[in-house]
Structure formats: structure tokens, C-alpha cells
Image (cartoon, rainbow, N blue to C red; front, side, top):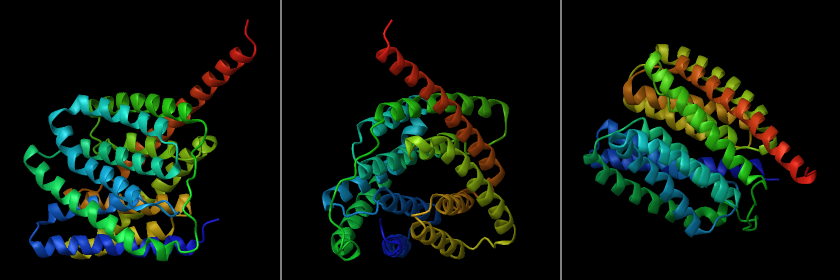
Length: 327
């Protein structure tokens, strides 16, 4: 059982890291759009390593690197190869679930693929890639150095051990690949027949729901739908009176980030808070409130996982029955 104070210490470390990175880049002269990208990169480096156990420094550098690389490269790949990049993302998702044998590795790779999916739909031109890759490299190295300095203090009484993932790796990989294929088909329909934007939330929801326990996939889908709806409704009210002051909005973002890491032990509450964080981030990037769209997309992604999960389990049960009772 992990003590809740561990999550508090992680929250302090990760939030301060993101604040310092944004302030330093602001002092360097970066514009608001770049500061938002830098904040995303920093947050993804933290999320990729947000697994409450001691980790070796080489793994922290690996996890931070793949996550920030997804931010730096995803937008450019999505701009130049819109269809091929989604096929690549689905393949990467299947590999992440099938080849990850430890929970920490699964957390890092899934975070990277989720980030990649997001930035495929938030493309930027090739000229920005070099700058973002440089920023990503600096941030990944800085986070690994911070880890080396404070990890022993946060996890002083915990051994460094590996937590194996669920033995149902093939089923989860199959589930995520089939769900994402169905999800992308629905994204295509939404693109051509609705005005809904930020459609990457469908594959993102699919990935995050399946990331959890194999036995609780349907339950987590329902909880995520309810939590995201609550968060979206709250943000509609909140953004209706919030002034558009960049640094005030940043303070609110950092607060959401701190609360998310602090409540990392509770799936429902951290899902609500990450919903607040993402809607706030999108609002700061393009000044649009997408709360109602996100409710629709979350329900769609969750429903896909529920239906495909039941079909995959039925298929695997039938296969095992045939193996045990051959005709």
C-alpha cells in the first residue's frame, strides 16, 4: 500500500518543475503559444514517470524522452502524413500494451502514445520541429536530473522493485487496436457530418480506459464518462466569468496539475481534475470552450470500449473453450 504522502511529494516536485520550466522559457522571451507547448512537454515528462515507486535514473530519462518526443514530433507528423500517422499511432498503441511487461513501462509508453494521438490532431508546420525537439531534449534531461536529486528522499523507505502488468497482454493489445480502429472510423464520420472539434479525444479516452485493470474495463468506462461530464459542466461555468489573462490562467493550470498529482491514488477524482486541466489548456491555446464536445466524445470513446471489450472477451472465451474441448 502506497502512502498518500508519496503522491503529495510527487505533486510538489512535478508542479514546481513545470512552473520553473515555463518561467525560464518566459524569461528567455518565448511567446505564449511556445509557453503552452513547453508546459505540455513538461507535464508529459512528469506524467510518463508518475508511477508511485522507486525508479532507476535511466528509466526516468527513457520515460521522459519518449513522452516529450511525442509532443515534439506528433504535430509535424500529423501535418505531413495525416492518414499514415494515425495508422502508425494505432500500431504503437498495440505494441505499448503487448510488449510492456512492467507497470512503469506501460505507464510511460501509454502516456507517449496518448500524447502522440493528441498532437496528431494539433499539427504544426515542419519549421517548428527543430525548436520543439531541442526544448524536449532539455526538459527530459532536466527532469531526469531532478529525479536523481530528490527520488531518494521521496521514496526513502520503499525498495526499488518491478511491478508486473496483467497477464492478459494479448487481449488488451487486441482490445486497444480494434477499439482504436472503430474509433477512427467514427472520427471520420464526425469530421464529415458534424461540427465537433478536437476529435482526438475519442482515441485518447479509449487508451486511458483500457490502460486500467483488465477486469474493470467496463466499470472504468462508465466512471470516466461520469467524471468527464462533471468536469466539463464545471468548466463551462468557470470559463464563463474567468478573465483572459495569460498568467492568471497559468496559475489555474498549475493548480489543476498539483491537485491531479495529489489525488493520483483516486481514479475518479484525478479523472475529473485532468478534465479541468485539458479543457483549460485548450481554452488557452485557441480560446474555445469545448466542454460539451468533450462530453459527446468521451461517451463515444467509452461506449466503443464497452462494446469491443465485451466482443473480445466473448471471442477469447470461445477460443479457450474450443482449445479445452476440441471437436
